[in-house]
Image 1 (tube, one colour):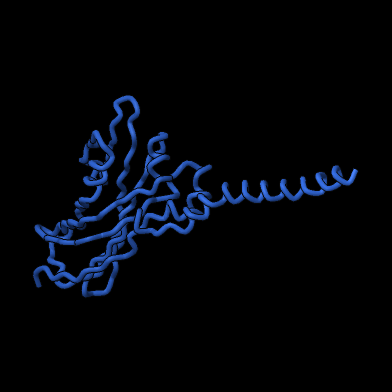
Image 2 (cartoon, rainbow, N blue to C red):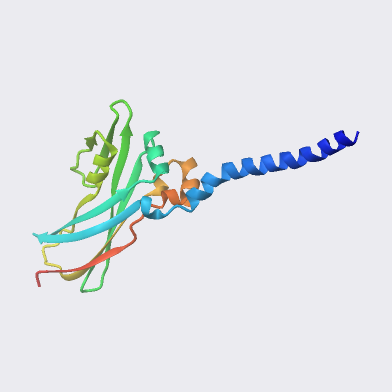
Length: 197
């Protein structure tokens, strides 16, 4: 009887250890993911250049877009990823003109290709055999702004590129806003330019 009492006293302790180990085994990958460095994914604006002709401002910028594992998985499961480029143009007069442009990357399962749509109305969607090719093309920002006939003179141009999480399907939005895996944002990058005047 003493033997059975000892055995029954040890079983709950063993179960507690096993359940604690099971919880740790489940939680550990999640905790590691939370602690991951953001160097593995994100958006970085590398350079901005502009030219002006006939009142039209052309903006060329380079960005490095690295998707997180969650974003890649969602893309492969048919969720298009929309990237928004915000622009703020501040001439010497001080009035700020704001615009935004949208790029979209989607996966085409029937052809096993990726499609990139650009912000300009004349842009035809381009198709790529690999995601890295589509992201390389997304890295080249080419925008046109303004129709005024005057030179801008000195001005400040600010750009920001980010994944538009509000464009994700409804059920994905709250988890995306809470997870660092979906925080793909370059932050604002500004450059000073002087054309004409």
